Image (cartoon, rainbow, N blue to C red; front, top):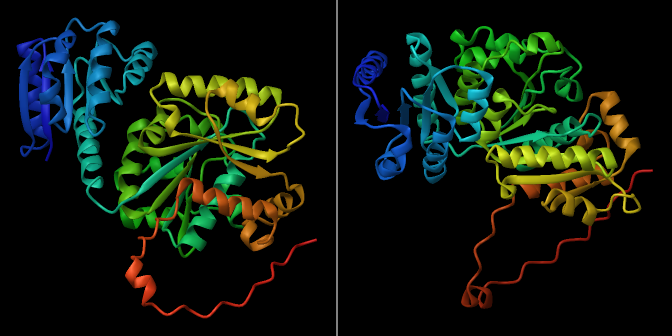
Length: 402
């Protein structure tokens, strides 16, 4: 059940929306205020108490979205549904920049409205389940090693930390994340699953994902960019609502996409990993990507810059990169062409191919960046005094690979 606040400037349209809400679920609680979007600030307190804010203004203009953005920013758990004059690309981009992820145009399509409410209800229910985190990875340029980093991070998280982990390959262009973990084709790709979204439940999902480790599943992406263009936001949103309560960690490979589809993952992500290399092209496109993310409402505090193939003698040093991006580098991964190449060619994780390599150890350290280990409670002085000291453990010799 949803607590819904409707702000509408037209009684007839408000009545129509109320009828659609009741038709979707009689259990929803709907409150209606006759007003326009320009006066939203007056109703901030009421909006913050709701699960869903529906804004329907006959005379809505893009400059009114500043008030919508302020409401959305003040209530992170609040979902916003905006009824716009049209579904043009201009309106969609403007709405997303204001923090609105659900946009419909008048007259409202019954099936689409019901689907949006159902997704928002699922999102609310998912938020009360197991504690789960989504982390998205993207890069401004190809060849950054984003997929290699993500796949090995996920495998390490699943194997070493025991986290129930899912990889979602949402890059949509020549997706190959599954090839780094398995030598067999997937039962179904993300696009194929979404084409049957009406069948989606836990059992159907399990038949589609690749089970590559007891704690790690992979939802493979499509290798056909044309088919990747068929994905719809409502399908991906429903998928995320299903998987988040089922996993401890969901890692999403976005490739180089920043669009309405990828923003569904970015919105749900606690952290956003941006993978870069120390080159002039990465410096320029990286700065552009970070600027776009900020403009879309993702703060610098949410960004984790991962510097791949770090070279201390590179022309673009860390300080130059940080000054250009306005974000500190969160982690440096060493250059290790030999073992990275072996892992890719064998389709196996670095922990299996070269566990003691510098790159594998760098990935293990990267896990601590995104999933810091909980700090153990400080032992009291008296318990330390009266607790016998354990025998020293034998020293372990680290093997180095040639």
